[in-house]
Length: 503
Image 1: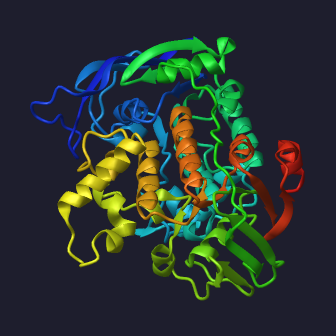
Image 2: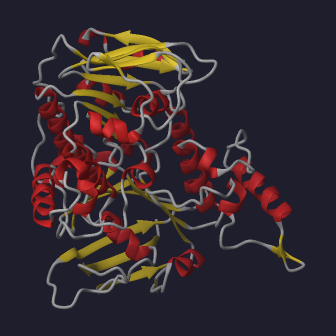
Image 3: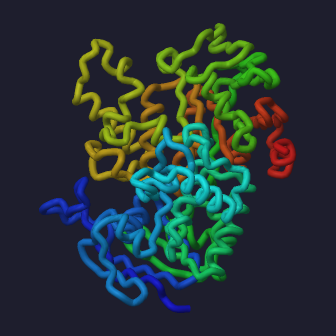
């Protein structure tokens, strides 16, 4: 097949907020990286968080210029001044972090920045008509284009991002973790769509950490490590252990670390809790040092339950017993001060202030505990941040680096660090390894095991069934806002049994 894209010896040094090389630096984010893409191909790009994948794609997408190297598009030199020019040349980027306006509806997000005008006014009728056509074309018949983005689940917001990118009639699509928030049925539909696009000659660069989906969707795979292109292989030669070794430079053994011991003492009991006015009452409990998994489909009520416990969402009856006492009228501030931490699914909206630096984000949830006299001790703040950065292996140039400049996986580690710094007794994790590479996942699992050994109770919401089974001492499965199954025996934790209880 003909090469539609060639990136040759791309080098990018540490850069400022404008994408320009920092004067005097010798630190390279990308070091002589080469990558090519054939017409109608899905080329998987894989590597640890911080390996350079996102930076390479930002170069291609026009967000930042390369410092060295050159790019050919359809055999012609390619140099663009911004994402708009890149889109005009047929390159669309579906970002891992969603870039949608929450206070606009689906249709106006799809046409944002390119609104059609009729008689000097935005043609809203045309926008809704074309958006309906786009949604239908890509198989999303059940989505109303007049729905506000803020009213959509994360999964549906991801769908809108995909449709928006595809609406540009692009010849190259960059998909950065496109399935991270999708259900199994939505993933199947996305893969059908990708195969359709391939048959129409569209080329796709597919970034993912989900090993199980790579062989199903990819034609070739390129591994990046420490800013360098390590190897490109045909997916016919794909071997997971080999790919992991190429990514991290070593073999990862014992992915799921479970050395903690479960106490007989409950940290939290939820009795008869109704997360909706018409849902069945929920009864769950979590013991000291126990990791309890929460399974279920997107929309089953797992996140709603977590948010109700933490105090950022009302509930409609029942009670919460926390550390032996009724925990009435919870609020986020009350929960934080009481030792309840909630690592949300959407780190960008609910978890981090991405335009603040790393150390400020880490100290954010524990600022009153760290500085009871209400005066921030900068030295102590830096000391505590340094400990957490080292503990979680956050890849950054300094703790003063803005969180917005980190990879998605390293942002997730900072979010983890923020809540661990608050020294919780109950840690609620909503999709804790979303967008995190295989090595970072193993590190997170070790951290979870370590804090469970310290007696922390952990509630873990996960849509990744191997993770759910591998890390949980018990599993609750939710369906339509209620508990459909509890599994207490590790031997009974199977993907088939969990999936059956969600249907």
